[in-house]
Length: 279
Image (cartoon, rainbow, N blue to C red; front, side, top):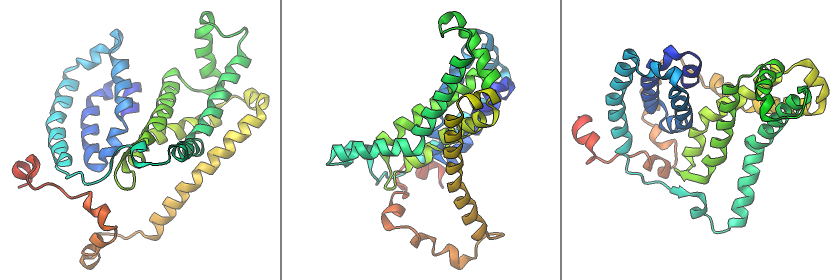
């Protein structure tokens, strides 16, 4: 919905409600969308787009979502927060080992593929230019971005934001299993992989041939990245059950996770939500 609002200005009025609803589905997931919400705000603050912000439907729908969102935030804020919270170096005694693990994590998860994709775009535009890159032919670069790769400046901006978010997220830990990184990265990973797949699919044939080895390497890494999704889909198919689970199974779900994992989900009965809204 956030990305769609960048393309269809009339969908801005639904953005507040969609974001608010996301808090119940995945609060950390919504946290991961904040950089993209800021990008939307940056775009709509431009003079030619401000009228969409002032549209009465946008004002009414997004204002109503604040009330609903407040209740959701009070519910989430009622947690007792009995889980690790802080920068990753606060939980490590060996900073050298931590730095090494962080770099390996970056490279294996997204940085290698992101760098190669940006390198292909840069070399492709440079190769297609009639002269060296400069401010004078910036518009030509924009045109080549669409012509040679089928992407727009806003799509490239989204990709760069996704890389930035994925770089920063691992630096802060929240939750025993580092839930913040796992969940808040969802939006950025979706945009990241969708962009790379689009570049591979839409890049012009002459760029493919000119930088054949680079293009093949990106394609191989992209294909390898799909493998984990097959595991998730297979698990869902094997464990699929039509209708609600039987009561005997539901009663045992509290014992599925380790006690410390269950503990981090417990709410405070004296919180504002449980005193006034949860009754």
